[in-house]
Each structure stands twice: as structure tokens, then as C-alpha cells.
Amino acid sequence: HPSKWIRERIATILSISFGLNLTLFDGKSTRHPDVNQFIDMIRERLHQAIEIYQQKPLINVSGSSVELDVEARQALNLIETVIDIHSNLFIRSHQPIKEGIICLFPYLCQIESIATNDDDFKKRLAFYRMHIGMAYLNPHLLETLIQQLEHVCTAAKWHARRAAIEFIQNMIFCNLFNVRCHAKRLHELVLKSLFDEQLEVRLIASKTLSGILGLCAIVLSSPYDISIYVPDALRALCKYSYDPHLIQKSIKECMSEFRRTHYDSWHEHRTKFTDEQLEMLADVLVSHSYYT
Image 1 (cartoon, rainbow, N blue to C red):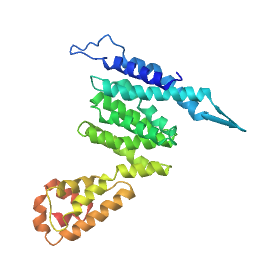
Image 2: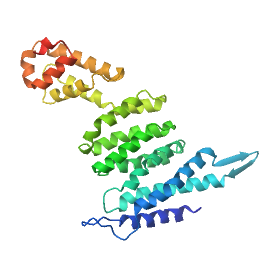
Image 3: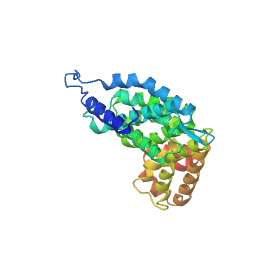
């Protein structure tokens, strides 16, 4: 619909209806509209709208006249309405996130390329994607979302790839315990993005991996002592010590500095480590005989 006010009311009414799409304790669903069916129905139309808007300029300038492309405007209206529905569902839903909403995630990343010149639209998109990352994700939904992430990270549009990598930070933080079993897959996604052909994607990937630098800071914060956090931080760094050069170099410098500052009193410091931690340090940092 051409009226923004009407589109917003439609989004509100639909989200209220879908918010009552509940699964009861006996496993049965209420008789309200099914949000998963609705999203399946609009996904193809949303995909078409994104393609139309990307291919056609919203405004055509011909000589002294300026014309609004009707088809592109309709496509943008649909895109904005779907985004509003998505946002309202999180506000009004009485139960955890539905699988259909997760299936919209790739489109929220693709739309990023549309919003390149609209900072407000970009902020809204990032916020709406964050809704998904902040939601409670059971194992099934988490697997579905990670599959979507893996798909988006191979997308042709670099804006979508960047949005997906940026999203991973929030998802891991908000689902720290659930996501542990998928840590390797997510780690590989970010590492591959370090070598992406697009600089913007590489920068976001390096920012996502900045946790490595945080671990280094913990280790180096006690140059002549061993705080209670250092053994676990070193253990974590050891796990990533064979990763690509960018990470490996930072870890190597950290380990070298740690050895230098703790060498003289190592016979005392080593008592703060478990045998497993000592063995990992020996493999990564120096000869095995140094720690044994």
C-alpha cells in the first residue's frame, strides 16, 4: 500500500495476531494464524522485491523531470513492511522465537545492500538482526540459524557477508552456553572472512576475533605474577596459536613476553597451572623440557 501509516497498522495487526500463535503444554497449537506459514508465503515475494529494488533506481532523472519508479517504490514498501512485522513480532510475541523468523535472517542481511545510503535504515536493520541474536535459541533453532549464517557468508553481496559476520558477535554473547557445541563452525566462518575479497568484511572479521587481543591483555596484565585468570587465558590462546598469521603473530608475541617476564620465578609460577595447561604451553611456546 502506498500509505506508510496503513502499512504500519498492517504490520502491527499481523504481529498481534501472530503473537498469539502459541504452543500449549500438550504440544498443540492455538487456532491463531501460523507465523511460520505466513513467513514461508512472503519469503518469495520478499526475495523478488529485493531483486527489483536492486536492479531499478527508485528515482529516474530525465532532463529536467524527476520520476519515481512505481515498481521500485512498491518493492521498497514491501521490504519495509516485512521488516516492521519482524520487529513487532519480537515485541508482542508471548513465546520464544519461531523458526520462520530465523528463515528471514538471510533477507535481513541482503537488504543491507539496499540501505547503503540510509544510515537510519542501516541502524534499524542491525537492531532487528540483533533481536534474533538476543532471543533464546534452542538446539534446533540454533542449528537452523547457523546454517543460515553459513549460507549468507557465501553470498555474492559483500554487504550481506559483513552483516552476517557482525551478527555472530551478538549471537555468541547472548547464547554463550548454547552455542559452545557450534564454536568450531562459527570460528571457521570468521576465519574464512579474514581472507574475504572485500576489505569491509575482513575488518569486521578481525574485530570479531579481537577477543584474542583481549586474552593477550589478560596474560600481560600481570607481568611478574600469575593472576587467577591467566592460566585459562593462556590455555585459550594455545588453542588458536596455529590459526592464520594475523592471529598467530599476536599470540606468539604475547607468549614470548609472558615467558620473558616469568622465566626467573617459573618454579613458583608453574604451581598455578594444571598438568594439562603446562603441557599445552610446552607444545606452543618452548621446548617440552622447559615446563617439565
